[in-house]
Image (cartoon, rainbow, N blue to C red; front, side, top):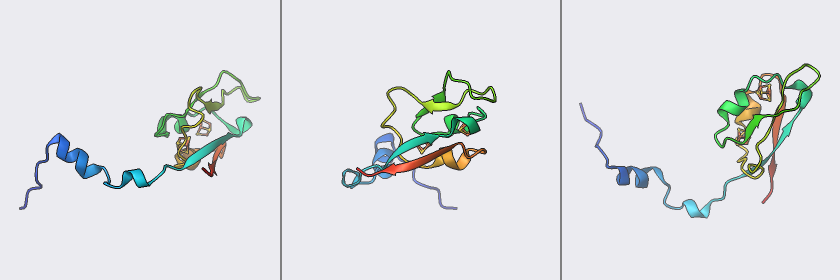
Length: 99
Ligand code: SF4
Ligand code: SF4
């Protein structure tokens, strides 16, 4: 059986980082939350790779605290769509911002 080569940490960094990364810009997203639909399940908070979302202090008419964008993270969304994909209540969606 052929064993995979063991790479040092610096080799791994080179291996994992595309060499032309500077030629690409990340997409940017704007988060839209339909507060009345949110059931505070926190899936979107837990799965957002950029940690953009948090529970708000507000209460909707069902007694739940809807999610909101964290202070200071207004420009952090990369429009990956994970939150809108995972939300069981269609309470969050993303529009891509043209940069
Ligand atoms: S689209 Fe991605 S980065 Fe933006 S808030 Fe949703 S999970 Fe986070
Ligand atoms: S996944 Fe949907 S219902 Fe759950 S906390 Fe996020 S927005 Fe609210």
